[in-house]
Image (cartoon, rainbow over all chains, first blue to last red; front, side, top):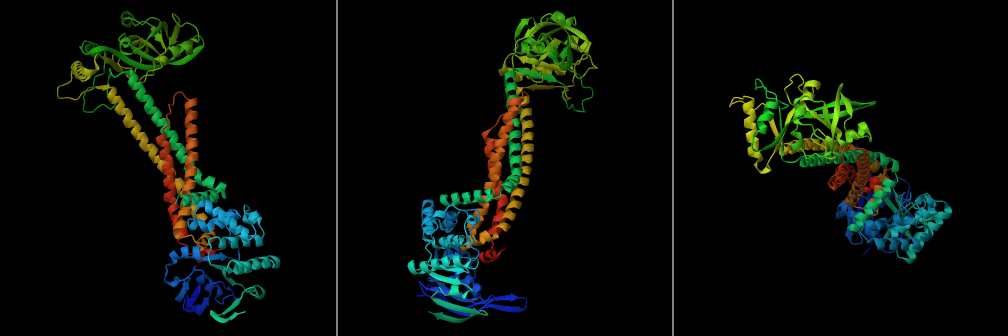
Length: 227
Length: 409
């Protein structure tokens, strides 16, 4: 059984009389342990696709099964728990909470699944160690470089042992050196920890790190190649 | 559960700490409200307590006779309380003593010293009604009362003020241009009194006060006494004695059997009732003031929480993306509002207690009694304010969808 299985996803927005098909009959399945890059120009529907895969949004029609859970049949309000257990998010803008330290940012998802306090710190430090930032645990986000902030965000995505990491343009705000650092980290997480990684990017050399490349255009999947 | 709440609380403190100035200004309304309520409750219950103490020291055997303040207009020709009443009351078997009671303030002069003095014009029965004790000298006697003698018995504190450490006996002071010889000095009793405080005052014969100085409320009628103070022999039969007194006064006032009384007889219990109803009114007033200031403070909290929700929309999106439910978000903002208003409440308590203690230390005339109840009550109310006014912003935050919140710039 694939970890991610979507069948005939449609996402249709109505702007006045105009109907916009952000997703037009997309069916994709991803196996456990894959590293997938999703590419496409802006407006191609890749972000809409990611939001649906990330359980942040629901399709207008179609079916989405995530690790055996029928997401399309689940109420949006109940999806918080699914996101917490199954998915780690890494965003282009890092999306750390500014006034809390690195380790507290990493602890955040565990507050919402009611992990006991003493375990939270322990696991958060482990996750920071996995991204090589255990020495910066008590720094605030603005005391860290962009690459370091993104690594904190990656640690946060690891800490609940979710099988999937969704990374939405994770290198978009980083310079080349930091981008390489971050992408090597993703590769390691994929190879060593067996994380399934779905990466959105518009840079071909970033997409190179992935083992599979899906291209979107005008709300449709136009190619799907494994290396 | 405790873990989660603790985490929420810490998050709230962090969020508040991030905007210290704003938080301080927001909670100021609650600080002021709570401080005001605590201070006023402390003064209120202090006043009540000191009144109750005065009454009980006063003795339950004491009755007052006077013309009512709010005399019924149906009474055609109300008569003043006079010495005729006093003499009649004295003859009653249940009465120990009955004395005229005319209380006025006068300017007193001695040499170059000039001060105000609380003067009670009365007769010798006054020494049998109150438990006052002489320090030195003597009380005035009946002969002196009958002859309009210009003599006075002086209270301890007043003597100290006028004479410093000199012996006041046989010295002459001037009251309202009339010289008085000090013939007795009272021991300090520290009791205060109902209107008249012996320590701060002086006793003179009522004849002198009434005729030579026009003392009293009704200065046009030379016979009118402000009040008659009566001491009954036995508290157990006080009700019978009261009836006797009332019948006697109706007689001396020649009141028709079907007509209303033109006088009023108060006892300890009726004073307590009066004080209680006064403090109840005050309590309602304080409650209203407290409620209004907490309302204003609460609106401030709500306002700032709405701003906070808008400012932190993106943060809400992040939290939702990593697994916060709507309920978690709601709880977090509610916790923040409650924390904010509780901090305000606690500062208010500190301030209120501080003010009360300051008043207690620096004022002898304002009695203060702090109560744990008022502190718990006002902190409880400020927490409730936080819940009430924090709910809408928290609800608004929880209704955001993660995708919209994350897109918010």
